[in-house]
Image 1 (cartoon, rainbow, N blue to C red):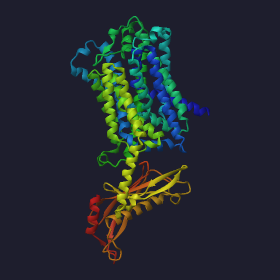
Image 2 (tube, one colour; image 1 turned 30 degrees about the vertical axis):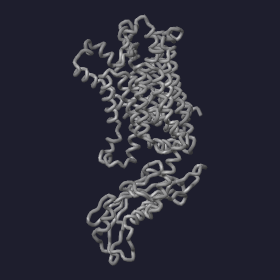
Image 3 (cartoon, rainbow, N blue to C red; image 1 turned 90 degrees about the vertical axis):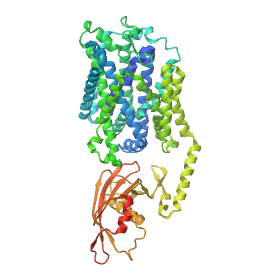
Length: 624
């Protein structure tokens, strides 16, 4: 019990650091600048609450099924239609974090210690920025390559201790009394509607946000594998994350309420709004000569470590996500690219770095990235949550509609933000939620979709070749009656035969026996032959089809009552031999195995090897 609690704390620390990306880290300063400590505590609490609710929700999901891989199995099924949005969410998070450390830490230092740098030619600035971004990028990739999801919590424990020491030392030295100062809690904006124009989108964005974060899914899955309570780990994570944000915001409040600071020092963005993200750095630079050297160095280390532990977590999570998806991908373009390139997050990080450089050169602010998380991704995340807990939401995703509502809400929110109109900002964030609720609860839409599917199936059943498409079986899985589609059909060039594995297919330990996979492939091959060569008759045939060789690579295991799909197609041929390629998948789209077989054609009289008969070539050609 004690070990599980300690492990929960270790994972909680890693959760907090992985969630401490640029948006939370630097936007806590801006919320303090705009709304004082009231805004800071509201922002930190809502952010931490959303993080904990993700952990609580995934714990409930994991408990639905037995085994330490239950959450991983669920994620593979759940994530399939969300793969692009998960990837884009991760890409933008990495870009935002690189942008934040460059624009709000490294850029102010360059301006302060390199006189005239900000007025130099654009080529010099661009070259310097590229070098700075390359430094951040290489550090993140180096650390990310050193650790796996199993070991990263120990590295993060060391970083968490360093951050705790730095924060304690800075607070003791500066002795900020802002918590007891009423002026630090309230600003003139607190009583204005614009306060809610920020808070409600923050509530929505951070409540649904973790459900699209690959880093959080990977941690929750690993906790389940280690038999650690996910909700407990995320409780510690939310608490530590809350304290990290409060430390940074209190430090910002100390600066904003000092005699040194004036509103004229804040930077002005593209929309004419003022921002205070870099004010702590400017304060450290201004007073560095009268401070002990470790005070500014400690603060810079805090920012660097917080960003590094986000970027290395993102690297590990992106690598995991890309590798898992490339294994089951049938994209012919991807098959031409070496797997070590497809699986590597470096391309993703280079893309994020270019986005960050563009943002710095065009004087963007972190809020311009934030708008995507408060609007565009909300519909995807909300529907993803619904698909975890609401049965009615299991129909296919309307990708075009989700993109359209996301883009529309993005424009609405951006308009309200630059005009500082609270109700427009709120509407921009709420619209995706309303749409998802309508999508889930709209029974008429579901009825129409079901009727159309039934019409198509009825029509298909009238075609002899496709009659098997309309067949289905009902079975009891985990106490619930589920309908499992079975039969045969084509998916592009692939002939697909689907069925349910049963007890007869398993061995003594409950997994499907290894030899059964070959039987499945053989049966699918015969059904494929029956379709492409419908006139083949043993009584009058001029050739027989024999198997010359058979290869199968076992990748994953499966068990009884799992829907299996065996895919087979003609891949190549020469004068004497034809090769068939096959793949075996489970219901979650996981690749169970793959292989190939070589066929020869012989005379039925003397078994002499023949050239491939013309009718076979004609039959196979459409499926190559």
